[in-house]
Length: 410
Ligand SMILES: NC(=[NH2+])NCCC[C@H](N)C(=O)O
Image (cartoon, rainbow, N blue to C red; front, side, top):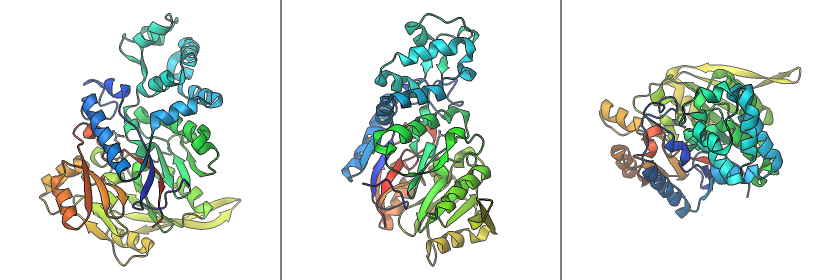
């Protein structure tokens, strides 16, 4: 089996997901916003919904890997364990007084326990159950149930933190502080986990040291035909796209990157909240999305060993044409149910456009978006539904909750 994602809709073979756990129990009405959730979750129900999500994929023959298993198996490698702790626990976060003692505490945990707290974060009270209080202003000023290490509830949205693009992986630098430590986990998994360490894939980016040059997987669509579409969004910056584009184009695996200039707003925080692919020529597109200006990036000359990029601007009204041309199509088939703008906005907010294709013309969707789903069915598309009443509270649907690592070619 090869790790390769050369398109958005070819038969999905292997995918990484994350089942909600301890980290979701950490969300409160006070902190949910800081953690990018619009509501707190009924965790047990969210887990049931997630189990169903996984089951639907498995029934279609998809091999589903769980982030927590991958992380646990990764930190079983001593070098990987040290790498994760080095990048998770430095004194900028814990202060010079507590950092040593906290590190020792984590080093003493077995792989399963360490995995739980790396993802779930740890409170002051949980630390003091294990070690006597270090002399530390950082620890001192927390109340018992405040987090000494923050939880990572957005690991649920596996799509964003790493993204497979053709024969390589981009380990992404995350825009929001609440998500930055997620990158450490994926970085370690792809470097050290036995499934990936010898796989020989390309690394399109090392988010762990990319800082403000952010790019997130929800903004990246691998169209096929050597083309990638990227959203310049609330989360993905032009700097991030340039860095990614340079490596992609230098490899020769990618011939063009189309960057769409998106509105910067929470409701459309990533491109896949408004545009996803359903089959080789069809896209669901949110009707409220205006035509966007775009740029095509292609390879230029090499100057002093560095590939220069050619940047070509396109007018908003050419958006679909630019994408169609790159795909070698006459035109795109744009799918958007006919409904009043408020109803359409409600379904977009509930991830009606955030579809995960399991094969061409077969998509996974939240059941609540009845108008969109019925409309797609009317066009002969097979829509597999899951409940997302709880899962959707952090604003993400089936596409966001999945990180494909292998898809069949078309
Ligand atoms: N690819 C996506 N649309 N991801 C949705 C991510 C939602 C998450 N709560 C965030 O704000 O980051």
